[in-house]
Image 1 (cartoon, helix red, strand yellow):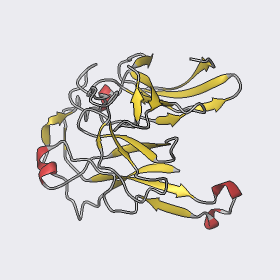
Image 2: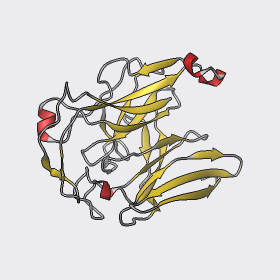
Image 3: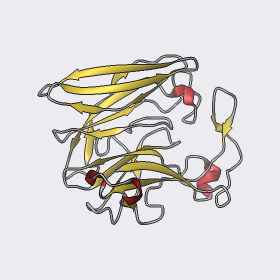
Image 4: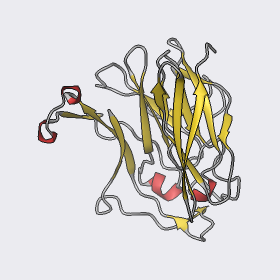
Length: 246
């Protein structure tokens, strides 16, 4: 299953005027557009079909189900959504859990009502636990992974975009450091995954961004390849975490 961002055509939802509450270090201000989350479920990919024979189900089936009110006042007044670069994990009860970023300065999430994703709860802020504080994050990828033992990992920046030289959630300069939290399934909670407090795994570095991927490598543990990008270099970094019972 592959998550993606669906941007609405500017012919339908024109960008709003610049909002200086969402400026960047480059001196530009963001203009609001409309975006939603989507999922591609590959029904027969394990059978090794030819590309033309791949069967895809597009989710959610309801228009606008993966949406979140835009943080910019003018865009929100027009009903625009900001649901950016989602990640998806399958819960133990087979519901889908989708996490994403927005311009609100924190992560957001939505949960399907069943394993077939025929209905979805409204997206809301992602918290460490029910009624807890929000997982702060600018608009940037925040990959979520399910582990073999039923737990989850989420990578995020741990602030709203106004630290480490960033001026707003829209400022790509703020895409650092990289933090990770461990998530545990809570079947009777409103938010079905509760997360630990953040641990920094890639410290801040000027003009750099961290984007994590995770691959399970049994029986030794987890390999986490990372790409660190700056204006002048691309550095691949491998982080290895030994397997443990904790």
